[in-house]
Length: 171
Image (tube, rainbow, N blue to C red):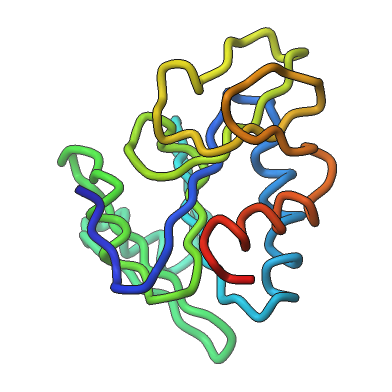
């Protein structure tokens, strides 16, 4: 079960690499903010990544063995947590660390059970997820597809935001 703050709605953008999830997400956020919503995101990475730079103090703290390092300034703060061999956390655990917002959009975690818009480009050469995933509530694509869920125009963030607003009752 996905644990999150009461009232916070969760929506996934799921699809194969190269389908346009990040492009859609970065176009969607301003559309949703313009409607007065607060939005946060979680991005799943399939590979090692770093938000720090070698040689910086926070990087040196982590290299020395700190489990968590927080970097804070007058403009932002970031918390880095080293797993140190522990299992990758489940989405529910990650959600529990997020501050409450109207909508939390998850990019990736395509196998986790939460409502998702599948981002699909036939040119990527991968199959649709929706026949096997009952949590797909719509498909955003750059092609006409026959599907039992709403088909949204991938290049029209306003139309996708309209669907999200209607689906979650934000309208």
